[in-house]
Length: 111
Image: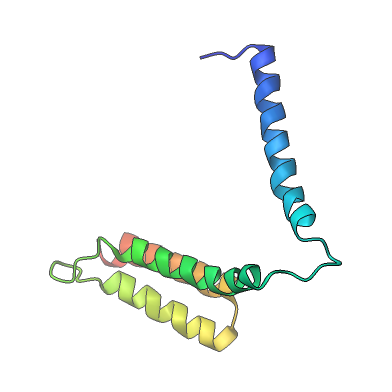
């Protein structure tokens, strides 16, 4: 489907408006001279952990411990992620390294 110039401009305007609102609304709702509500501070503390827990569950939902390779690539990668994170305390390094290790295991070792 080919869009007309008008349709393209409307789409760009809606996306720009959405971006401006999502970027500016927090500054309007929570100005710097007012104290941040306790509920928002609480959400800032618990949401990252909840998001990581959901990602772990989503990534491991189809792993079968009863069929080959018995979850070994996933287990090795998770152990590597935990080790690297405890050693270097760098999220990007631990998750990136774990992803690379998992992909290498799946492509080359557990084929």
